[in-house]
Amino acid sequence: MKLYFSPGACSLSAHIAMHESGLDFEPVLASTKTHRLVDGTDFHQINPLGYVPLLQLHDGTRLTEVAAILQYIADQVPDSNLAPPAETLARYQLMAWLNFVATELHKGFSPLFSKDTPDNYKPIAKAHLMQRLAWVEAQLQDRLFLMGETYSVADIYLFNISNWAHLVGLKLSDFPHLLALRTRVSERPAVRAAMRAEGLLK
Image (cartoon, rainbow, N blue to C red):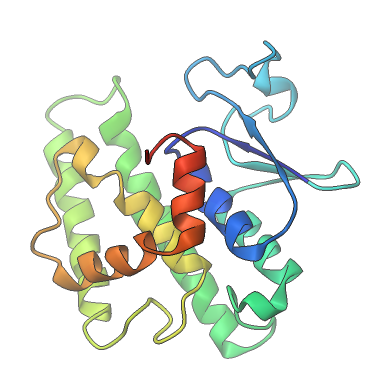
């Protein structure tokens, strides 16, 4: 398999999940700024939408969207326990978390990274994000991870996206449970391996 990624982007989630799973894969750098591969190939020829991650399977099939890719990776190695079994209530709860991170957090950061966003809208976007992060904090008061005691791909996604907070001036100091989860995730060997591979850790 090939995983197209850009350092520190949301594709870090998939990169971490691949390391957690132990699956063989080839990481392929696809710049989110130039939309070109190292060899000069226009990434739009691979993903017309131009964004990462994209997972190319052994048969050439291409899968996009973080939440879908994370579940696919987890399902290839059920013993990894990165996702509950299909058709269980726990699996639907995982899907709910993945969708929440994707729509309420991931996309919530987008206006703060866009140079086209009016300056007077950015405080509104930041306030909305802080409200959503406060809700996550409340859910974590009596659990180690989003799904309870079990680490999952939802925690990977949350870790990845919450990494962006400092880039836009959001402080997480009021969210000790979220910070504790982030610490637990950051200390995992697979997480450190993926971040090191992307040049995010020395």
